[in-house]
Image (tube, rainbow, N blue to C red; front, side, top):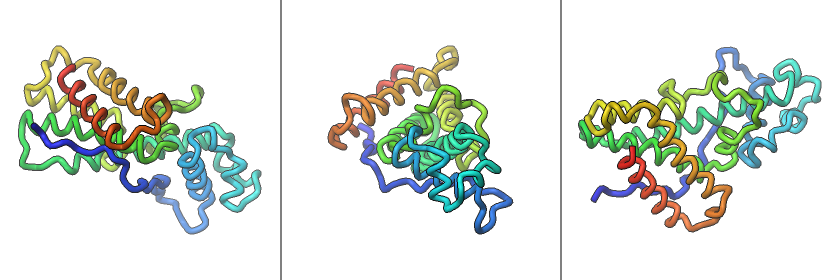
Length: 223
């Protein structure tokens, strides 16, 4: 039996706005974005209010409009940072996959790692997770800027790459590959939402761990 990864929430993940080549001390854009990130961390997308972000940045509301013309623009930027943070969490789990693993073993470990990273982020950074995936309908969820993690891939692309690796290793039949990322994502995201916002919220960490790992077993076998 393979050793199980734990889904116990780790220490809070440090999330900041993507680095900008024009960044300098006192950069109002960065200050507003960092304020928006902290608001999202504490209360999800509903908590991200432009006026509150300007207050936290220490400027008058009108000053913010040079960088964010509306609340929607601030939401979009904060969401991009949150999506990037999810990707970083998934990449951190991928980095833990032993390099000695090859072929099918490596492919299975990679798929489990991306799922584990996703679940860990949901449990540890609930507000940012909601910001990344439970956002107002009018926010563009496919073309936000600077959304990638350290590898340049967003969470969906990391999952797709893991599934491609499964095909290359002969674990997943090529004819079953099309659309598999939607099914895998839907299953893991669904459990994450049940755990943080649904009837499973507040369950003991050990129970969340067990359910998460069983679900990842089902995803691996089911695709």
